[in-house]
Length: 500
Ligand SMILES: *[C@@H]1O[C@H](CO)[C@@H](O)[C@H](O)[C@H]1NC(C)=O
Ligand SMILES: *[C@@H]1O[C@H](CO)[C@@H](O)[C@H](O)[C@H]1NC(C)=O
Ligand SMILES: *[C@@H]1O[C@H](CO)[C@@H](O)[C@H](O)[C@H]1NC(C)=O
Ligand SMILES: *[C@@H]1O[C@H](CO)[C@@H](O)[C@H](O)[C@H]1NC(C)=O
Ligand SMILES: *[C@@H]1O[C@H](CO)[C@@H](O)[C@H](O)[C@H]1NC(C)=O
Ligand SMILES: *[C@@H]1O[C@H](CO)[C@@H](O)[C@H](O)[C@H]1NC(C)=O
Ligand SMILES: *[C@@H]1O[C@H](CO)[C@@H](O)[C@H](O)[C@H]1NC(C)=O
Ligand SMILES: *[C@@H]1O[C@H](CO)[C@@H](O)[C@H](O)[C@H]1NC(C)=O
Ligand SMILES: *[C@@H]1O[C@H](CO)[C@@H](O)[C@H](O)[C@H]1NC(C)=O
Ligand SMILES: *[C@@H]1O[C@H](CO)[C@@H](O)[C@H](O)[C@H]1NC(C)=O
Image 1 (spheres, rainbow, N blue to C red):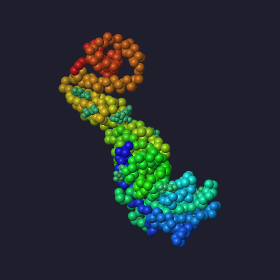
Image 2 (image 1 turned 45 degrees about the vertical axis):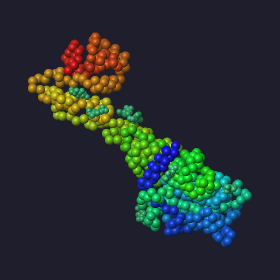
Image 3 (image 1 turned 120 degrees about the vertical axis):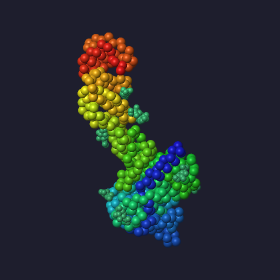
Image 4 (image 1 turned 135 degrees about the horizontal axis):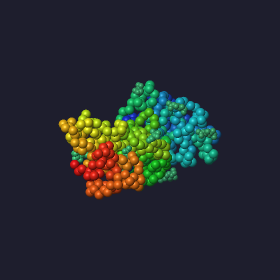
């Protein structure tokens, strides 16, 4: 189990840092990007320390009295809220909210991300990106937006609820980390430009959360995706297992944090749940984890086990798609849209010399395995070398060699120029092909054959070849092969097939 986790986390680290801008910034800490912060009311604590809105961005959270943003006990019919507005549109990937330690007065709170400036009243018409259902929400909540979420503003709102009798509605936000990049083309912060996709392993802040408090609770939430827990910096296996049990494969989870866990990093990933199967004879072209314009485009091996949003594949060289789809989209609930692709090997267009012709009713656009191609010597020519019958084999090659015929000096001895099939494999394939084409059931076949031939057939060669098929079928098939030439057929029946 743990080997698997480690393996996946390495792969994911590679995956995420391939093309994603790993230089995400803590947007709230960037004064040059922050336009303003505000709060519904400012609590002034002992020592006349006002808990202003911007204290949620001061990087400190352990001392409630002076380092948090905090509201007064608002009137019952009012809503407590806190918000930040950025100077330009951003792409937000993660929000880590650290509330006041030991308090859960942000009961049933909402998180909104808006892509324009809206007033608190206008929020009622919008959908929150997060709503905590709990009466006692966690002290810390990490919400990840795997594909990114456009945002100009972030609001935290504690609405009036029926059950809030007894205590007020507060926002007591000690720290808000908003990780993302600046989307606008006139981005003022060059390092955080969303299109400036540099790779920097040191800034992989997206998929982890530092546990702020021991003796508390932490909530992890994946926006539209599902949690996959990677590891925990504390080597406490039992704790990791209980977190796995609580969180893995869920969109949302809350787990208790022991004192030992304080300041430890929990690593996780938000995934879609489509499993990434390997398909034979395909080459991955791209695999995406996102539906935003920042993509995790990469080339990885077929047996990569992460969960993906979409996959594009190509058939391997010399293979063509015969079934399914080469582009697969992962739907919510872990279903791929599109059938598994089947790519079959094909042979190249057969070549021929000008002493021969290729006999086929119409050139086939694709030559699959077992396709038989027959050549004929030109008039007054006979086979000198190569094979007049060739079959497309499993490696996409024509068996045998290209035939070469030579002009006969005197009238050709007919027999030698005929393309008797001597190779047992070729014969088997021809028989199979004919079986398919004619679609004659064995019974009907053998009666007609018996009527038509009346031949007592006890030839050893026939027995040797046809252990599966009846003697009658062999005769029938051989007859068809040679039947273009009536005298030949006569000869054949009388004397049996020539062995050379
Ligand atoms: C842990 O937290 C709970 C609730 O906040 C509190 O009642 C309890 O005393 C704390 N335990 C320790 C050992 O601090
Ligand atoms: C902003 O939000 C509106 C309404 O939700 C939406 O129609 C629009 O596409 C959004 N713009 C961007 C850039 O996301
Ligand atoms: C807050 O409560 C008011 C009144 O109950 C309600 O109209 C509004 O939709 C609520 N807002 C949110 C974001 O739930
Ligand atoms: C950010 O990226 C956009 C698009 O590539 C570019 O037009 C703009 O100049 C960049 N801004 C900065 C500050 O690098
Ligand atoms: C957790 O991940 C870190 C960084 O990737 C790694 O150094 C550490 O060994 C991992 N721990 C476990 C238990 O896999
Ligand atoms: C893929 O190839 C393997 C090995 O050649 C084979 O066992 C398996 O049946 C193939 N799967 C499909 C779907 O053809
Ligand atoms: C997948 O392939 C089937 C036929 O193999 C086709 O009917 C269907 O439209 C394709 N679906 C997509 C999403 O490309
Ligand atoms: C393609 O390959 C599959 C399995 O490998 C086989 O069942 C199918 O008949 C093949 N299709 C063609 C057109 O050869
Ligand atoms: C197919 O034929 C080619 C050329 O004759 C040969 O090299 C190859 O080994 C054959 N492959 C199989 C699977 O029989
Ligand atoms: C091709 O012809 C040669 C010589 O006649 C023969 O030995 C060989 O078996 C043939 N191969 C095939 C695949 O028919």
